[in-house]
Every structure is written in C-alpha cells, then in structure tokens.
Length: 600
Ligand code: M6R
Image (cartoon, rainbow, N blue to C red):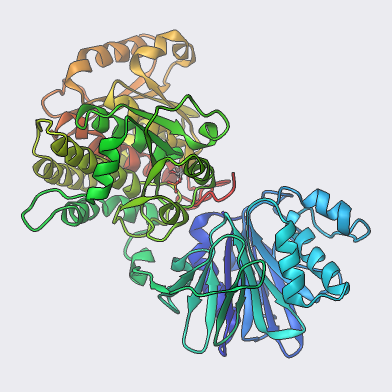
C-alpha cells in the first residue's frame, strides 16, 4: 500500500527520498512523488507508474536538504497525476503526503472549506487545505496541524512541509504505520524501517494521534493537548543486504529459495540450550487458560491459520476457529468465555486484522501476534508476540512467511501439548529438520516445476487446485499464489466438494492440480481426479513418497502427514512463479496488489 518517506538534514534530500521510495516499492503502488524544499521554496515532482519514471522527472527538481516522498496505491480517485501525492494547499504554502483513508473528509470539506477549489479527487487534499484554512485563521502551523488531526476520522500517516518553515516536518499517524528514524545531524520518517535502513537503524515508534515535529537535530513528540512525550528509540535489526535481490531475478524466487534457511533459523530460535522447544511461559499460560482460540488473519496468513488450527486441536487439544479478519470485525461470532486471539500477519500492519485486535482488546481478551516484523503495529498492540525470523519478505506474493507461520504454529502447539501433559506422537524438531531437507529437494527441482508450469498453465485461462484435509488447506494457498501473480483464474476446492457444483466448470483441457499427500484420503482424492478426468480435465497430481502412483506428475519427499503443507506448498509456489514468468508478468509487483494492506 502507500508508503511515506521524509528527510531533514544537510544532504541532498532528493536522492535519499528516491532510494527510500525504491525500498517501499514492494508494498505496491501506482504513482509516486516527492517534494523537496530549498531556498526557493518547495518543489513537487510526481509521476504515474514506477519510481523509475519519477526519477526521470526529478532531474529538474531542486537540491533541497528537506523533503517528503510518497508511493500511492489508489483508494480515492484513479491513479493519475493529479491524485498522486504530495498534495499542496491552494497557496502552495503547505505540502502533504498521506497514507490511509479519511472517513469524514467530505463532511470536513463542507464544514470548513466549501469554497476551496480542489484539484484532485483525494481525501488527502482536504487535509492540506484544512491546515491552510486554520493557518489563515491565525493559528501557527503546529496548532493548525494539531487542530486538523483532532478533526480527522479514519486512518492516516502524514508528513507535512510548510514552505515558510525550513526547520520542520510535521508528522502524525492514526492506525497507519509511521516511524521516525534518528540520524546524526539528520532525521527521517518512513512507513517501515526497511525504507531508510541504508541511512539509520535507530527508530522511534509513534503512537496514534501524537503530533511529532521532526527537525534536523531533534524529534519532539506531543499529545493533542501539547504535553511533551519522552520516547526511547530502538535499533531495527534488519540487515540491509536482506532487502536486496542478490543473484536472483526476482524477490519471490529468492524468498522461495530462502525457506530451508528460514526453517533452520526458526528451529534455532525456538530451542533452548538443552535442545528442547521453547516458547515464552506467559504465552503458554494464556493458551492454557483459554477455552478456545480464535485465529484472525487475511490472505496467505489466513491459509497458514487453517493449518495451525489442525496443530492446535490435534496436538495441543485446544478448540480453535480460524476467521478472515475483514469479516470477523463486522460479523463477530458468539465468543467463548475465555478466548485467546491469535493474529497471524507477515507485515504486522494489516488494517483488517488490527481492527479486530482493537475490538478484542477493548473487550479485555488476551492476544498473541505471530508476525515477521518486530515492532509492527499488531506486535506492539497485542499482549504477546512470536516472531517468524524469516527476514524481510519483499515480493507481494507471500512464500517464506507462510511456511514460517506454519512452523511457528507447530512449535507453539507442541510446547502447549507438552505443558498440557499430552503425549507427543512426534519429535517435532526431528520432523522439522526432515521438512527442511524436503524443501531443499523441491527447490533443487525448480526446472521440473518450470516444466509443469509449461505443460499445464502456459495458455490456460483458469485452473483448479483440489485436495482433502491438509491438502485442501494447501490447495487454497496454491490457488491464491497462482491467481495473484499470473492472473490465471484459479480456485482451491475440497476434493469432495467438486461434484456439488464446481465440476460444471471442467472442460476439455482444464488444468486440475491435485494434491495427494494424505494417506487417510489418498483413495478418495484419486477418485476425485478420475471424476474430473472423465470430464476432460488435464490433471497434475502432486503426491508424496509412499503414496505415489504411476503417472503422478511430481512426488514430494516423505514427511510427517500434518507437516506436508510446509513442503507441498513449495512446489505450488514455484509452479506459480514460472507460470507468471512465462506470461512475462511483473512477478514481484502484481497489478492492483499491495504487500502491506494498511486500509480496511
Ligand atoms: O501481512 P499480512 O500477512 O497480514 O498480509 C495478509 C495478506 O494481505 C497477504 O497474506 C496476501 O494475501 C499475500 N500477498 C498473498 O501472497
């Protein structure tokens, strides 16, 4: 989604902003812009499309040492030049960048600035015009900005420049992420630490509705009443090289290849000195006391939650429900007496999930976030956090975060099982080590996955993924991966459900990718394959050693049955990757999608 950067210091802001925006490209955007301030005033440069376009445009821009930048993922108004950020007030005195959605912008416009002519269709322009309105009424810029913040309803991260004040970037946030980075003789703002990690690794978190004055040598944080707030900074533990593609042609491919290393890191991080699995005892206590777990997540993280439910119920013995966050928030089911909420989110910033967390916290329910980003909003606001240790995931299509989420959920479930005195039927550490080797085998088999993509998906308009039990969960994820990057219409179905409607869609040559890794349902899923073949489908069967049959398309190495999603999904990730590549598509930045979905 939208991304913000800002710089105030002594160097040329333009290059720092552009590099920061390039680092935010992975979040998804359709236009970008920067505003820099020098002795002549503020210069705004914008471009539709990629940062490369913006770079060309900025050749004429000034060399100021203060500036703000933005990547826009359109919400209000089409992605065109006028709607791109930064936006300026009528007199051009104020310039603003904004992430999020202002719910009451029309009311505010009618109430305060009905006669101001707006140049864009955005809610953002109303904010900057309001600052000018209150400034014209005699308020200082800080007071005008504070006044506007007190009026806004919705989500926002804001950076504001005043052409009459070379010393300050005015900053505030509500629900949308924004950090202040601390430098030596300069300070920065950024939607995430990754954007500015090249210039500083020291950051201050901002809380909702604080007013922050970012200057070259100071960062002043105040509440809406003007009281000063002290905030310690923290060091963001991101290795800048983790955010580079290295030898890989795409981040997605790199991240698929990183999965064995991520598995090893998780095994290491969640092991004590005696070699036993470890989880914070406070988390175990909360799981122990819960009568039901509610997993809340979106997209791929939701699919990981479906797998996690199996571990929590089968190993830990805790009844578990999995919910799509955007539905749960408006249609909350009848809750148990002592629920525990588990939020699964790679980014830790998903607005839909955060909306649920806000509500469940108000109700006094305990919460645990499983995330890849330490210090993210969901992590900060939940009672507990378990980290994925997957390293930055840049490609929009989530791969290593999914397998990391499942691995962490398996460890949590096993530790709880042990604490509950439930007999473990597996040695999880040994099985995860086997999983790691199996993933390596599949990654090495990438040319075979490329061939599958060629044989089954090169020209098709649609594709179906089927499976039963654990394989059904993975088929949902396989279909999401394929559709989001290749734009092939793909759906995942429970094998037994096809004949209740979906089989009507099967035509001559329709690709059906069937997962057959579960012993208990091996015969049934193969029966479902026969049903679709009888109607002309082109079946691609991915089975597991020990369950394979002649003619299977690919056989994954044998792993413990509940852990097969960690392995089978890797073949589907690679197949999707090559299907998109063959169609010459932008694998890492698929159309219309954003990495971090920070609006509801
Ligand atoms: O950051 P999150 O895990 O909360 O994001 C949730 C979804 O937006 C995300 O998993 C999305 O579905 C992926 N891009 C799919 O690959």
